[in-house]
Length: 348
Image (cartoon, rainbow, N blue to C red):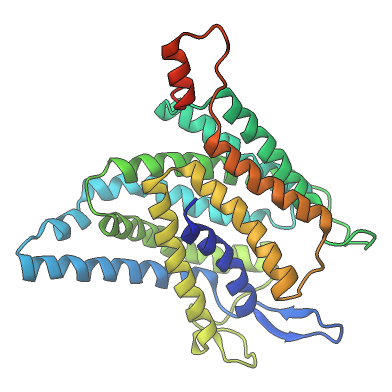
């Protein structure tokens, strides 16, 4: 697995948590508040990626006399290919936000972690990518272990807040998020790997179409999602924020650090999908959760360490390694060609 992708996935929640912590309660627990508009972070990160790619393309044009990158960046046929994928990712993100508080956390965990097996099935159906029987078994076991890890409390014997029962709309939104995540991940992989354009040009195309959808999402977010779904009306504008000790909105350095983290994640995750596949990306996401758990437990002391969850993390790491090493074990009756295919992982 690419370490940079694991770091990118793991850094995002830690940085956002830091950027939204405005103080500490008497018992030492952090006080968190929405200090900036999340969609503004997305817009600024997309703009940076587009400008960076344009600068590289202009360098190629003025220094080498090659206008291929500029033409490719704004090729309408290629941009239209990314338009539905970007829309799917945007709707998936909004569905995740709107599902919060409307579905039981355990149900949400089970549905979301089904992405691992769902992605493998989708890759098999659309691209014919083979998996051995052992690999399919490991995928299902890994999914169950991750679900068990998520459902294990950080501290046994402590009464947590009672979760509201799942609403039908919460289930629908969560299923919608999972389906779109799987579909867009697999088809996005094909689009990235089949295009002959350099990666940074592809990234600019993705960000151009995503920027369009992000701008279209601003009105429903401000006038519906925040006041009626999140119950947190936002009246500070795109780049403002409430008065907190470290500044208001983007007048503080913290939202800009979040923007930088988001840019890093954009490049590393898409680079992982282009050079590996969407399933490896999901593995990185799962492993990053383990990384964040250990950082929160031992470095930040934000949560107590649970030995049961610790055992789960070891199993998760081992199963991911096993999947990469797994090949179908040859049986006694196999001929030499079949044995060689199985030992090299060339199975259907």
